[in-house]
Image (cartoon, rainbow, N blue to C red; front, side, top):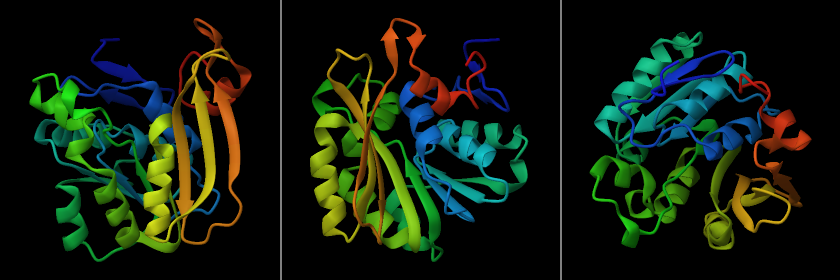
Length: 238
């Protein structure tokens, strides 16, 4: 299998035209995001390859999933990956900027997912497509929260993954928009390592927050039972 094609158990993703390749963050979010409320409509903000949309298509039997992507190459590749999947009839990608989409769409969604760009602009690489995918100034947290506030249904859920050190600020922004934190999961690479990421789930009807920690490996390539249980429906070797 070419390195430009990533094979999962039920679908494959071509990624030769996308600046950001398949990574652990996306797989974690796609595996962890809630579907217990049986969402009928899903929005994937900044879809990239389409990974999150495809994972949600696998995890739901009937949800109609829409994605938006601003980069033209990534948009075309996402659409191609959708068309080549077993769920092509309920996957669709728009080529649009986030705020443009918010202004034009009247629908609301039962589930919104986003693996946002969050690297510091001072570390830009000079590759415009890669920078667009990776840096927070391409999609400020304020813009993401604004979009969710306008596009999430009253009983819906919003889930994202962000750097651990940004979680408090992000949660405060969400609270100011009327979103409550339902679940959070701190991600650590190993038991001894510092927290790296945090998975967050919000809704308009939150109560107490359920907090947990997930450790990926006990040592190099020795994955924890918790990580295997979360991702085994997707990774071929899990």
